[in-house]
Image (cartoon, rainbow, N blue to C red; front, side, top):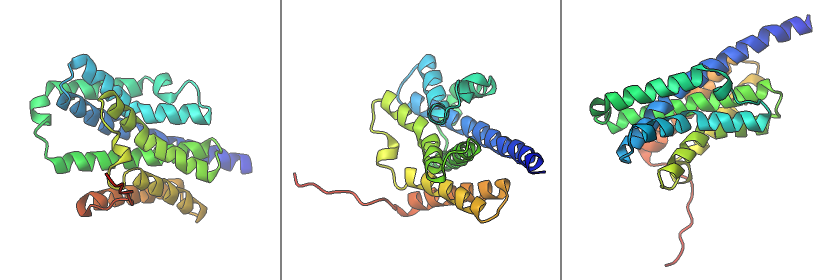
Length: 217
């Protein structure tokens, strides 16, 4: 009976990870393409930044937890979604570049939440200890964006944005706590993702940020 229970749980967790990963991939691929176009890059540059922004965090996570080769390379759906999304964003750039800032912020918060949930769930699936699993969720959420910003020659958003990595960390932590409290994998993922999304949006709306050191000139 125990082995049967484990077999039932594992596919459920894998389905949650896959759904969150693919959804987050589309969101961050579009955002990465927009960032690249605003930086004046050509089509190749847009596709590269789109790929890195969407898949960088997941690749880092998979390498750290020992899932090699990374799922983003092993599963054709990841690069296919990334390139299709990046290409469509480039083709319809005149429309995409007129998206309201609020919409872009919402998409970014949604992608962050999806990747944070996918990262922590996959780490737990690989029997990683809870705190480290939370860190893997955070890295999944912010890793691709950090690489994107470095390639675009700017300070990574994660290092100065109002409650960005902290929102991912909190959302991933809520997933772990909710599962320990007895919630199902699906319910824990929804609650954790919602917390990450709401905290990020509140931080943007009200200007919340972590303390910063002020040095004398």
